[in-house]
Length: 163
Image: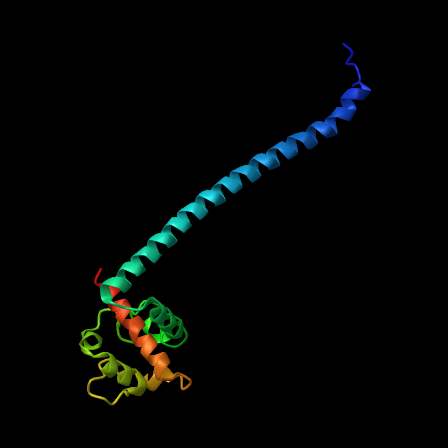
């Protein structure tokens, strides 16, 4: 039995068929990837909206100014986060839990401002961690306005922790 050699047309179609199949496969992969990314973005967007709505409710319920809290958050995240964590939850063997602190809750705004300004040294009998809380969190560039903003962010953390 003799097998005929492929015709010239069949030989020329081979690379184009492979190219067309590759383009189709790549297109399907791209479409699937884009659909997944869009679904992920919708989910992330919904989550972010829910977080913002929750924060707005906390601001309103606690009587806090959102702009002041956001300034306080920004300053807190550059100074206080190292010991107290991003949400005031405290890091082990470093800072105290600010979000649930009865001490912080009992302070007036001016008392909390003064505490942030002066800190609490290790030798202070009220220092239960025996870790130094430096005045201004160790950042001498912070002024009273910055500290007052941080105090309002801490108030926000406490209000959010109660929800």
